Image (tube, rainbow, N blue to C red; front, side, top):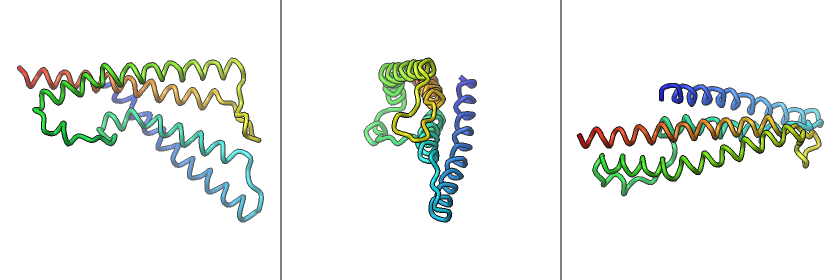
Length: 163
């Protein structure tokens, strides 16, 4: 479980670097467009790709740190053991299968994009799509693993409170 926690933290660091790159790309585009009247072909593509990638790569870390928004006013009224049990069941029976399936689809899409040499069809820059899809599938797979770890921890806490 610690390995998955470390993976989530490492991907969050990568996402942090992507934030810096994203800011750099946007500043470069603004300067080129408004100072030199020479917009780039690639800045828009890099913006959505970096933004999407950093969002997905940081999701597992947010789950590990309990950083996702939750509406828990009802759950707070439950005993700790029951709250952990319900959380573990939801993670194991709903979130894990859903995100594992989404990860699988994303990985297949990345493989397909690589095999076909797919490029962004609406972009003048026409970047290859497989690197972007690959990063998305890695982030989703990491989130799936972190969901599994969270479920195990919830079940462990529920069992400890019961003993």
